[in-house]
Length: 100
View 1 (cartoon, one colour):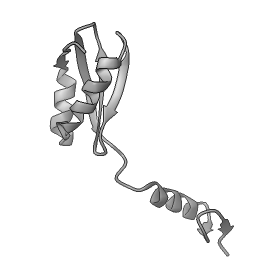
View 2 (cartoon, one colour):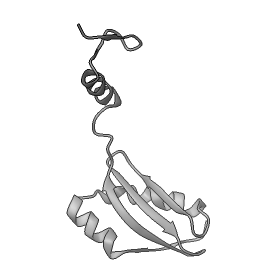
View 3 (cartoon, helix red, strand yellow):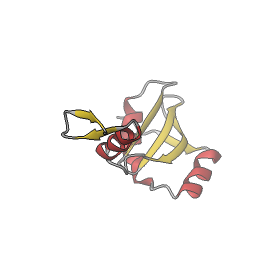
């Protein structure tokens, strides 16, 4: 595994400042960039942050943008609120019944 020189676009730093991004996700992105092909755009991160980067050449990569992950709400909460909007009530995790 050879070292990769990583540069950050101005847009990337603006988003980091605006959104209060946690840069600990860079480690995951760097691992994925080592295995990426030239010209490939990858997305990586942790439970709080997602970072988009591209592999420019054999030894260079660019961080494009960063944004907070949308994993803060559990999938069950999202599903239940969508079901309630459709007029369904939750009886169990597998059965759905219309509200009366």
